[in-house]
Amino acid sequence: MDRRYSTWCAPLCALAIIACSDQPDAPSPMAPPAAARDASPSGSISASQVRALALSRGFAPVPDAPKVRPALVKLGQALAFDPILGGNRNVACTTCHLPDFALGDAKELSVGEGGNGFGPARTHPQGTFIARNAPPFFNLATMRHLFWDGRVELTAPGHVNTPAGNQITPAMQRSFEYGAISAIGMFPVTSRAEMRGLSGNELAAIPDDDNPAIWRGLMQRLGEIPEYRRMFRQAYPDRSFEELTFADASNAIGGFLVAAGYSANTPWDRFLRGNDRALTSAQLDGANTFLALKCSSCHSGALLSDDDFHDVAVAQIGPGEGDGTSLHDDFGRMRVTGNPADRYRFRTSPLRNVELTGPWGHDGSFRDLRAFVEHYSESDTKLLAFDPTTLDQSLQGTLQATAPDILLQRDPLLAGVVLTPDVVDKLMAYMSALTDDAARDLTHMIPLRVPSGLPVLPARK
Image (cartoon, rainbow, N blue to C red; front, top):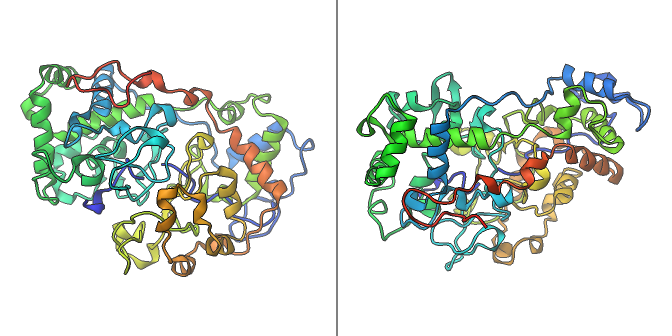
């Protein structure tokens, strides 16, 4: 496995920083405005006051999704569910991002190529895991950084930085119509552990650093299927199939995710649009508490993410990314920037549909959302006392002895944080307002068939 490219199948979805203040009214250099700090308990602050505060601080409903032409959505849907993109034709993009599990897989760490089953029941005969938790795909069109370490990044309109560097040509950059999400499909297919495999197919024989050859091999596969040639022609009528590259296939997958992963009908969205009855009294009180805590500095904006990177003292489990003396550590953002100050920093995950997208943490080391929120209360002590028996049995022996190093880099926002059970209750109530009921069942996304004729992965029940 070339861990530089472990991806969306490994990785979206958990929190990056949930709790940032020991008291709702605790003063801090990064504390929110006094109006939030001075808010009274439930019942004495009005919906309009909470809404005005939230909007004044940049919280907003999810913006409209970019329009995606239907032919591109149809092509992207087929490619996402078709195991033709797996080296041994036994794994698809949606093997690790299942509509049944809010576009994740409900596992701490995903199992890619060579695995059996789906979702939490998926296993690998050699016990092989991908290094990071699989994040979900909600509203990614507005995110500048993708993947836990942000290695796919929209740096300017029309330009996406990726681990492939100049192997992404200017012509391929022009194919990325929707920003970073258009490049999301470029790298799972190059990872041996995720999709390409170690042997048994023509793609596995290609050197790990020759991404263009892997992408050409995949386009050759697709070009041998008449239905795919027709679908590409309908999605890109201005070019012949021979003029297209895998960037156009990835762009189609991104376009499908832009359309299918759009989620904007939560109680919080309806509340911000002016519906005073959208939140229950407990959710309103929770929102008021959330806005009074520094966690709202990091979980901010329409997606409740600052799109930045933080070390929040999460234990390191699993195979890691080949870092450290054990080669089982994961240095996070530092792997992209080379800056030691970025060691153990991971992207702040959006909180939308957070109830549905566990396990949480960059390595899925928390299987219970409340436990993850409570982790931010005295997170240094919690990290040192992390109990690996809470993990899947096959991962319990993989806890790395890196807690002291992680704490050296811990985000200063977490220093001194103590959350009472009452505050945790309120945060949990608020997060229940971030769930779009439509995200509870996304099986309508699954096609009945794919052009390769291979089994749809996963199949519609």
